[in-house]
Length: 481
Ligand SMILES: Cc1cc2nc3c(=O)[nH]c(=O)nc-3n(C[C@H](O)[C@H](O)[C@H](O)COP(=O)(O)OP(=O)(O)OC[C@H]3O[C@@H](n4cnc5c(N)ncnc54)[C@H](O)[C@@H]3O)c2cc1C
Image 1: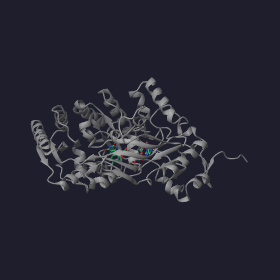
Image 2: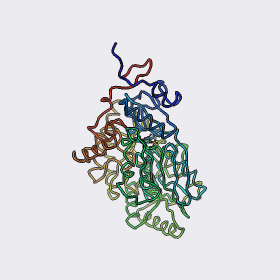
Image 3: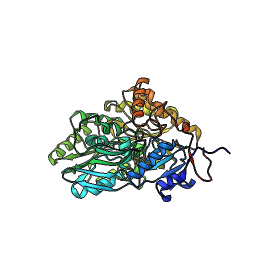
Image 4: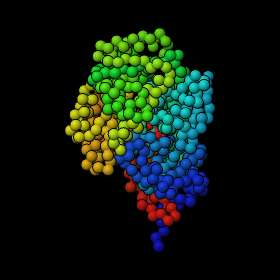
């Protein structure tokens, strides 16, 4: 009988412990996709390390045995970044979720990267501090996933994306060595490897700990919501507010379909269902500045025909409005069983034009499109609700999705503002980048990940795909694929 060359699972169990290695079909099924459910694959095993040392030992084993591995946080990604490799393992960091240190004087925190984004802000609030990047998934997503995706969120308009808030990181490189990039003090000499790592979508190694910058909670925060009959006027207001020099903390857009599903859900927050579009404008800073900016919001919105301009009465109402906005993707589940959340960026001035074009594309392909997005950043989220059990509808959704991306590129936009490329848009990369650009990206990736074992099949077309790692893992009673 031919001896199997597969890596024995028992070795992995010895590195960790039996309860840190999942292999039952029921357990593995829960890891078959992230938030992008159009792509699915079952991994051979899922491992749940507790420390940097355990991650390093697992990664070294993968390196020696030629087993592909996919880092994963909470699996809320929307571009298929944590999609498993069928012959490999999922390395889930969610159990490494400790807040290790808060340095109030220097305003930073040291965390294990499985810490949930929102829990960090909640933990440092007693010191008058918060962690600024706030993806709408912040009640579930991890700091590690945020680093890998260079995540954004409503308040990134003023405060900047994740990369601007990560001071340092502990990283397990794909051959299993541990390294540290960055540190508490800015302006370190040498190449900015930390900057290169943030946003590398889990393809350069596994981040296990991070040093994150904390911000002081502003003296005054005010949330206004402004309702327009026409979505296009809400878009024009966004352009005017920025052109007039305002720097809102957040500037979010919700269209009518989304308003209606939010208001019909448990997240109802008092948005007018007859509005074509609502803007949420959050202002923060010194009270005098907030007062002046509020006046400007009212003036610009009135000029563009807003029919309702209101301020959240108190902190509770403000929170309720944010909950409504952040739960929008979930509320869209009321329309159809599946949701394709897209992500692209366009110049702010092109928002009215692109929203019109997207509606035309939706009509052409007969798909149900809605929009809720970070308007201040020109970061669109066209959402297509569909039933994945209907193959014809799923195909129309894919075609409409690709056309929407092309339309965004045609007005000078980019393929992603915050959700990353992952598996979803890997094959769209040549729409934006030349062959030479892609070669350079691949060269850089090879420096970190020469064997391609760390999160294969993602981001770059033409790199080694999962099927090429055939060796697999030997699990008693289970045939290697
Ligand atoms: C309802 C909803 C709202 C969302 N809103 C936003 C938003 O406002 N802004 C935004 O930017 N995104 C948003 N997202 C997308 C998603 O939440 C973010 O991309 C988030 O950062 C993913 O974190 P995660 O822990 O779930 O990572 P996962 O989905 O588990 O992984 C995402 C990627 O990161 C890699 N990765 C994870 N952990 C590590 C690690 N420790 N080391 C190396 N690589 C790692 C994975 O391999 C994968 O490529 C939203 C998603 C949902 C479902």
